[in-house]
Image (tube, rainbow, N blue to C red; front, top):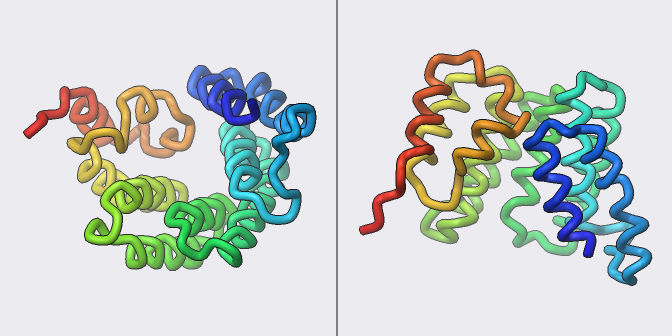
Length: 196
């Protein structure tokens, strides 16, 4: 049940219904408890995702203290997760995103590059694409817009990695919207994928 509500909250974020999305995300713990599906309080990938989403919402609303608290909590959940599941590809990328949002540029880039080294396309194609998308966010949030857009350009022609709706609507890409190249990337993502 919490998973469905998390997806609903993600749609609300795309619609910029931030307060509603934050309220729903904040209620996921109670929803999970009601349905006896609450993830472990100490180590939880799902809780890391919830806190990351709350951080993105607070960041988009300019609520710096609230965003910092959520990104710090998210980073802790993903760090704890990696102590028991070191083979989780996206957790390290999420930690890099949290560090980028917290202003820890060098650490964010280090963690993101480490994730890319650990999960090349030859090891897991889909995981490598997700990590590349996370790195685009890291670059955007650390002010390296050119690197972020280059990363997005590489992802644009690939199926199921980057969608037009996500790129056009998600606030995590707001730092790039004023860049002329962003519109070109958006147009490239909108093109139908050629199936070979």
